[in-house]
Amino acid sequence: AKMKIQGENMSGQDKPETNNFFTFNLGKGNFALPVKNVKEVLNYEPVSSVPKALPYIKGVMNIRGSVVTVIDLRTMFGFDPVKPIEKNSIIVTEIEQENAHPLTIGIFSDSVNNVTPLEIINADTADYGVIPNRKDFISGIGKIDGKFILILDLEKILFSINAELEENIEL
Image (tube, rainbow, N blue to C red):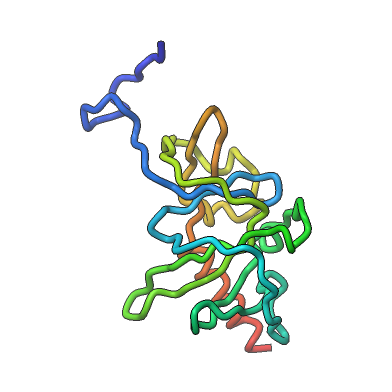
């Protein structure tokens, strides 16, 4: 039986908070995104590369008439891909923006798992050391079947990419 720590859950519910997340793998790491951010998953398609792009911006692809930027978070996080790019999936995500249309971004992933409820645990993301110096990219830690899953904060990642793009333009 699990011990209950008094005072931790003030809402009076015994069940830990669970939310539905879309889980996937980058390198050997387990990651998740809130379901509301994920539009669809595509099989790998070649992307058109963009000249002078940041190393993790792999290019653009056309999805039903919209031009979508595709990024490789493994490059951004310093991971080695575990399989050839042709075997990757592209997760099509949508990020809400203030005073603008939602932004659609494709993310390469080594494998996509499924939509699953994750138990959100109170943990300092620094303990997981998966993304060196980038713990601001993690919005929380989920747990399923004893495995920890890092929940990505797409808004923060996007903010960082935009900041880096602006730095590069000024050079």
